[in-house]
Image (cartoon, rainbow, N blue to C red; front, side):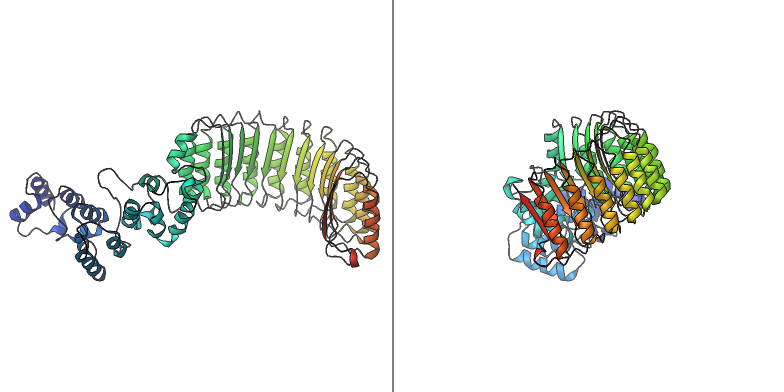
Length: 567
């Protein structure tokens, strides 16, 4: 075989090329020719595909090169499918010797291995596996009919993505989607439509035009990027050396560990960023992927504002520690939003959270979401102790929904918050935590200490407070004389008429309040309770914006559900 290949190389130097090979070696089978040799022969015009070998037929690059050089008539020899071959032959009989769309349309290239399509200067090296499978069709459609034909020119999995991009019209791209568009975008993993939202035709052009920009926002949630698409995206973004404000939504993209690694490698290069919003929720990062992302973020020493969503990524307790160890290195940060919901952190993970939070002494605004993490009383105690260390904080949003905290934990949370003397804006979600009446008492005592609060959003839905618990909570809220904006959710707490009346009696004492959102749905209020509510509302003379939810109750003619009032 080696001798035969050497012979081929010698023959290629002859003017008559392939014909010379026939004369020199009578029994030499063309199937034994290396594909690259056969392709060179075709490109030189030294041979046609009439006697194409099996290996040549299997090489779609060779097939396409021959078609470009010698016309559609050669396609009948370019497939191993006899039915397709005959259709192509007939098509060639009824047209000129040019490669026509009809010829390509009937050619079945699904079973051919397309590794390269090239005619001079065009290549598909960077295209996806799916694109390569139909690359001859894609390329022919693009060259002959412009971008509009591409939605019909590839396999069904890719077709809709291209169609979405093209529907956006000339505002985003001209009528011809150029070959570079296919070359730099992975059609298998990335919807072209999302790239076109930036207002230019290709990702490469986007990066070129955005290099001087300082602010970028991309919404790519649920676009199926996968690890490969994520890597492509971040490799491009790593070139944006001037970016200081970046918002990127990659929720539900199946990134996995490899995607997390790609995020880390790119983010670590964007050292000039001061404001970062990154949503990686529901991406199966796992502990290792989360570790990688955290290490990348730790490199951003200039950052002052960070919003990071790692919800539903299977982090576990150790990853929670990794996140906060990374954030603790960001000494300039003052505004932090961190969503670690649905990550099975448990009590141990929350101990790590507590220790991490305690290091963020400079924080003035904190939004922390730990819902559905199995904290229990111990985990809640740990988190509360960490938050109590943030003496500079003025705005706090804390979500501990559905963590089975129990009555004592409610007290721990408020005892911690009561130590934050600078806080004026508080949002606290304790929904579904089995607080009960005792928990309501603890909430009341804690709230009463927050004298400086002006804006309060408190969600105690589905906590079995009962009428007495509801009354206790109300009495605590009545102590907040400075409050101007109150959102209170007591849905599903069996308050009954007595509890409902107590709520309004308390709110009536808040003379500074102008905005009120009150949810008392599903609380067994009767017509009498409805009247009490009505009488309570009548006393709120200073209210300018009211939203009231009394749904799922037997209020007779008072049952209006959610009623927003504006004046």
